[in-house]
Length: 116
Length: 152
Image: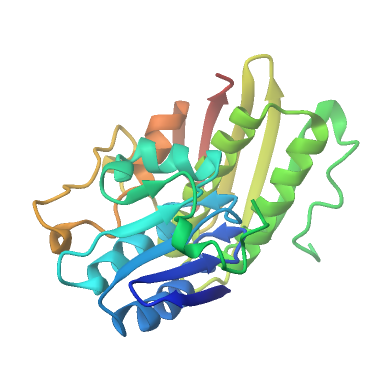
């Protein structure tokens, strides 16, 4: 469901392997990411490039993950596809999460380097 | 009705899609994934395809969560092509829809800190933002919700 890249201690990069972040998947997804994210204190970025569908349950899971980070940390979302971006914009949650068009350079040894 | 896949879709009269599936998040997820592929194969524009699957996701999950929360009931889904988009109807035998959800919905209150952010309440806002002429009827213990999703 998720792949964790721990190559950079200051950045937890989580690749979301689910094509659909919806009501059927969001609870388990939220728990998985939360466990990993709460273990550290650095940035947390989700690579969203495989996610084709996001619904309000998936959106709620992303908010819950950000709340669990603590310390005012913002959840960062990289490489959101068109459909995901539209839902984020419609609900104005694109103002809440930190969006990135690409993965940061420091992640350039990660498993998804060639996937873009 | 046996499966919850869309194998029976092509060749329906006048392109109408009719299907029945259990009101569970898993069946709904599979149904929407199948519908999305079917719409793509039909040549429906990506924008309309995304809109209708997003709206259907919210409508169907609302049925699964509130109308038929034990998952022991089916949803009947009918989708008809229209010149300007798609017309959708859902029927279920669950609990009635609260009337205040039908007129309009605001975005949930965002609050001032991360801890205040809403984790729910987006669904009906998304539905109202993307559909036209929504009609709800409660008749003989059944909910019938119909609406149009227009292209562009």
